[in-house]
Length: 245
Image (spheres, rainbow, N blue to C red):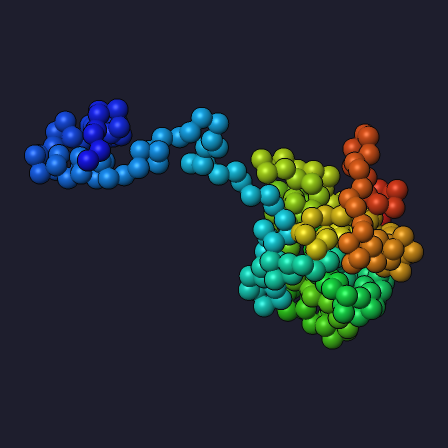
């Protein structure tokens, strides 16, 4: 039979034993004697597992709200290449919607998913009600990709997804926010942002199409941040002038 010493009994159990009844004491000693002592000690150099590391965020960590007001987990698109665009139907860049639909149709069989997030943040380019917005995109603009509910993509009400897309940190500090409508984010099959393109970069722009093609092939690598602050792909900042949405 294993011999016990006071050092083999956990401190919390010793505290209880000091006030225990004889029956409790006998039970406690029995279980301590039958448990492997190695399991009660943390070996030198072993990782502390009481507080596991926070899992790395990917696209699958987030959700949006769909056109019917229901939660839309982005984990649904795990393993896909996802192009996320903040759109506004009353915008000078809304002519890009047809090109985005063409892109979706062209590459969907290779795993491309386009998600449009309508927003009224810039130039008041999406002022309608939810029903009006969805009807306009579906029946009048004939988009072939997913259009979510209207949401804020910048500022204090910014969607957590856009904090992730723009390089926000887990502590809540924002990265380079979206500045205008039709900013485009390419997210790879592993759920990481691979590229960001400015609003004026059209869906049929050669560089943009090459980036989509490489993302689908798994050969597109994230661009290194430029000195002086992050820039969008295409070497152009968003236009913050309210003269055009």
